[in-house]
Length: 165
Image 1: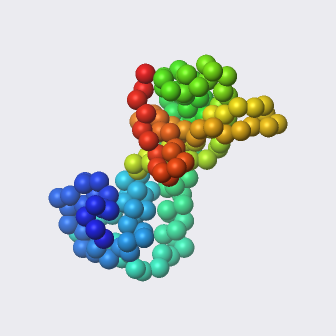
Image 2: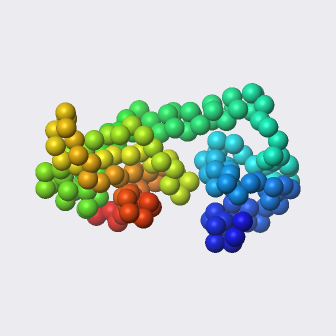
């Protein structure tokens, strides 16, 4: 894997992983993200065994941790709903989305997420129309941990971080 394709420093900075170099190029970012999210942990000095098939017990543990990260961890303080928090940020804290909403666009919860910079980010579409006919103009993602807002650039297929107003 080329240096410019490696995940941010810190994944293996200062820590010796016995077989991290054996992770296939196509899986490297997934391993990095799952480790960063705590869905599974790579223990320093222990073999990760990236080329060994996972047992059903290991897969059950990974799926359990994933569900915990996505559902339980993101319920927020005092049981607040993640969807309500995301809509609050889109409607009140992000200058770009406030302007779009002020110009008559509506926000629609997509019920889907994207992993951006190792953070689970919930997707919201802004567009025009009515509930029975909606035209998506923009797709935004709101981070569940740091509450960052990103806009999806359809042409370049990238998520662009936005300044919070």
